[in-house]
Length: 368
Image (cartoon, rainbow, N blue to C red; front, side, top):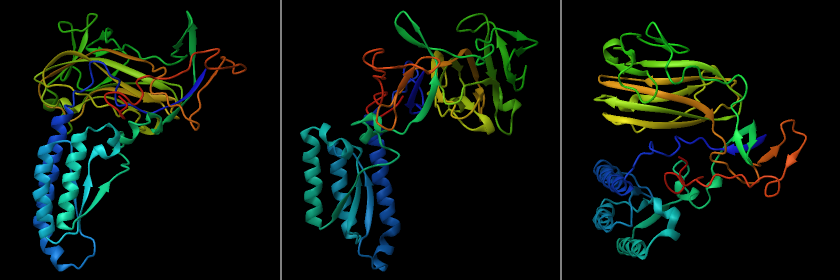
């Protein structure tokens, strides 16, 4: 048995991890932030002149590693000073990872500091971000908040620990092979024969897949098209869901979800999938903790759907094992025999329990 603390990841890595293109994203954010600052100045300049405040700041978010960003920031600072403001609240993700920056970053920072001194502007650095904390967590991933996993059963096979599903927990017909009268056995489903079909021509594995199409036509108000079933689960257990998805000119890929609701409709999964409008079969993953819930309703489907086609196949539910295990004093890991009478020592009876990808996927300070 094992007690561990694990954060809830959006999805495990593999083929489903989105390519964020960080550099381009940072540049777009910087341009948006500068544009927002210019608009803010246009609106608030008269107020700054009328209200006698000792400290009047303008918020600016940027990336000082990029020379062009600094080139745009310096004239903005001149305008800020002319409008009567006393300083800028300067935000940059890299303030949290200064020890990882090249000399160019500090050269650009000195340019900004020199301009601030010239204009008699105060620079207030925005540090210790809470919420967007990946910069801090990059230094120590175990600082992340976690949720407990209690009495998770494992079986020793050939000297290795393998997670056990446990009695009573079973996803019925997750491969969608069992169909009767157009309905998938074990699943509740919407718009049978209208938006949901058993497809025997387009499959990832086996003989049958789920095809969804013309969703808005048959659910004009909400655009819902979903299958779901209720499964029993152990409280405070980490579970892994995986499914294969294919699309063809599907208009609303952002509405595709693999959702999990617990007792009293408590949301347990917050996974977001990077599904393209048209794509071949691709596997997606979600991990959730059952918390205090002894049952969970598993949804696969679409919210606010439109036109086009979507296929599902090979949905699996299994214990997550040692995913995102946190190791610190307040989050102990304990391994015992099934009856709890024997406690095993890491490094002697069992290897040290850890997740080498903790806080590293898809980048430093992230928990994919």
